[in-house]
Length: 118
Image 1: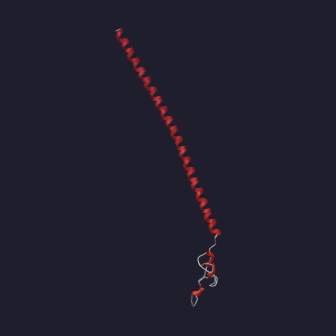
Image 2: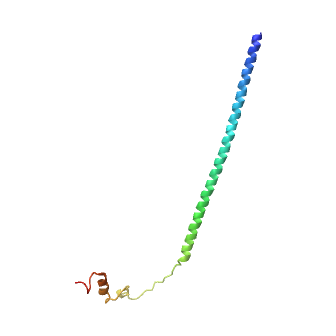
């Protein structure tokens, strides 16, 4: 009979130790979940901060681009031109950059042909 009591006591002690170990493992698992949650919160804050920085950078670049376009538009006003129809169009209206008498002098200055060449 004493043997059965001692055996029952050992079985209860083993169940107690198993229950204690299971409680300890559950507490460690809960602690790991809490740590994971904190890590996820930090990662989310970092992601939000990087998204805000990216959006602000894009907004600043857009504002600078619009300002430069505004300056270019303001600097170069649009000139209005009117077309005048002439009754007769001749080749004498083409631009002339030098007179016909100056042409041999210009060519001789370049060394191509002219009075000085043999």
